[in-house]
Figure: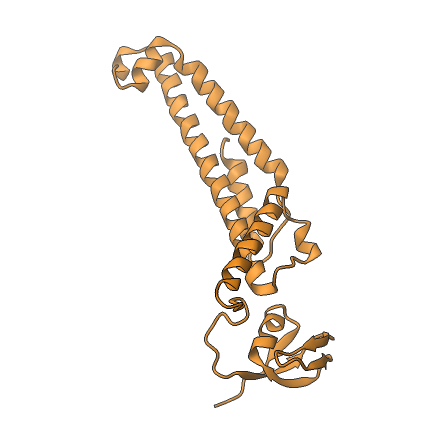
Length: 208
């Protein structure tokens, strides 16, 4: 049934939730080919005089043969299938671009290798151009890094525990500190926010 492959493409992306699965080039191409085939079949059917009149609302269904009436119904169904495929493809690509932007804001300008390999060539180009646009915006705002703190901080310093061995980290004052697994630190929020988002550090919530 037309449209089923497109619907499954959306379901697969929805099941991935916060992750970014590999770009499904095969399914995308099959959906495009299906839409082209449906369009060609409609063009073939509509070429008849009776069908052209029906499409233009210049004829009544009672004035055509049962075969032509059935053909008209099939043309409408194919047109609906083409529209459904288009909407699913647009939704699929828009959602993936949204996730690419989230990766940039949460993890920095360098996409991890295990995620980068899941991008199509066009998506890698988009990611590169988005990084450049965001960097230009931040430079024009006094070199402010908008990605560091995305919610208003309750304090400038935060206590964190190290989930994994992070290694040397340079603080905003120029000092360097080695972050070791299972150790606690009291550090500037601006320095630890990216590491918290990556799951390397965990903020310690204090009871008020």
